[in-house]
Image 1 (cartoon, one colour):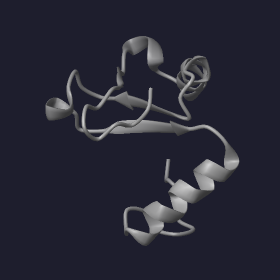
Image 2 (image 1 turned 180 degrees about the horizontal axis):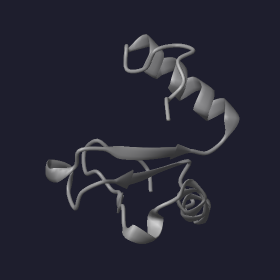
Image 3 (image 1 turned 120 degrees about the vertical axis):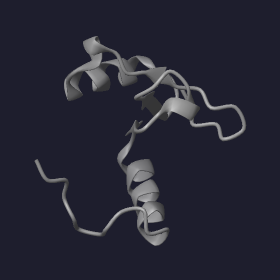
Length: 80
């Protein structure tokens, strides 16, 4: 499932997608390099999305882009 800004495609989060290993397993089955899981049935009612980026170089490049755009703080981890 590729992130497509003209016509977004995504997989809705379901109770069976409760853990990170479950999401990663589903993403491995997807042939696209980025899988998108959305908490909502459409983009209009979605409050959050989880992106699974496949491949170290692509992940590094996208994280770098997110940092430049001020979307994430460099070096800051997610707190539990």
